[in-house]
Length: 126
Image 1 (cartoon, rainbow, N blue to C red):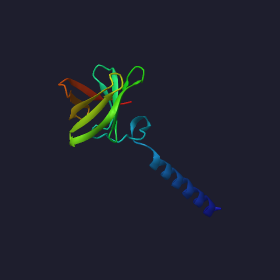
Image 2: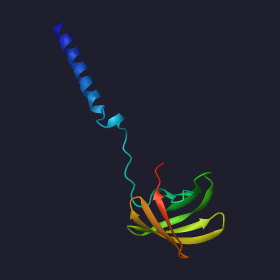
Image 3: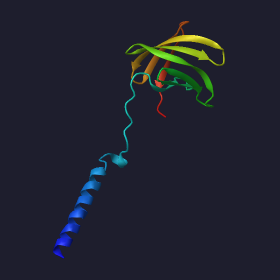
Image 4: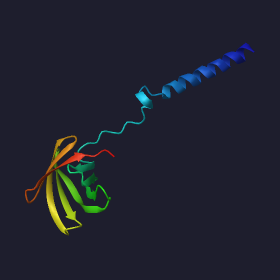
């Protein structure tokens, strides 16, 4: 009887130890930590809040923030570690434009169109 009780106690202690290893020390249960985004990959919103641009694997897409309608698409390529060149095809104007964007900070992208217009995109967390 003592051996069975000792074995049961050992199993219970092992279970508590294993369960304790799964607990998070983060407040409110923690949860998975999203990997930090690098470069321009991810979603960016215009400073006026009108459009959201998404960069993924060389593909570029812009949608209206209010309706989700696609406004433009295209492609992008890095010209150096902090600069990208975007080829934007406007679905509304039926035009193609080249835009150069510099990653000013991890959350701010400063852009200039081929015609000299400047605009800023801010990293959008959805």
